Amino acid sequence: MTPNSNLGGIAAMLAATAFYVVGDSMMKLAAEDLPPFEVVFLRGIAAGFACLALIAARGELGAIPRALDPTTFLRAATETGCTLLYILALASLPIADVVAILQTAPLLVILGAALFLRERIGGARMALVLAGFAG
Image 1 (cartoon, rainbow, N blue to C red):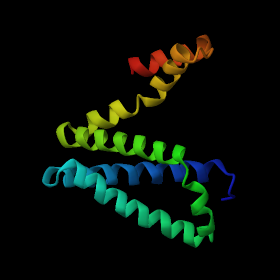
Image 2: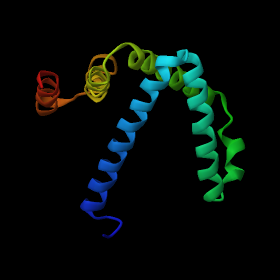
Image 3: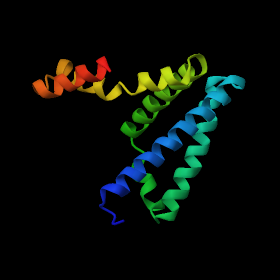
């Protein structure tokens, strides 16, 4: 497969989805025995080490100080809040329901852009959003 092949992209998406399901299953199991804040903390520590290893492997450790600006910290705080809410949902709902709700996010972003940012989304895209909610 060439780097630009469709089959490579399909394989990458299938692998990512499989890892995502495994990760969510592990988070659900962890949330049964640990408080949600502790789960988020431990997940953050593990993700931090994984990201640091990838950055080091790419030889880009020198770029880390440029990422230490207030907007990056604001985004990190927002992501942490979203992760905490997601883990709370995983702990209290069936995993299928949580994933189904999460997969409406792109549809909600399109509607939010239309309602709050006055983006023109067109009839075809609106029909697809409605079909997504109907499905």
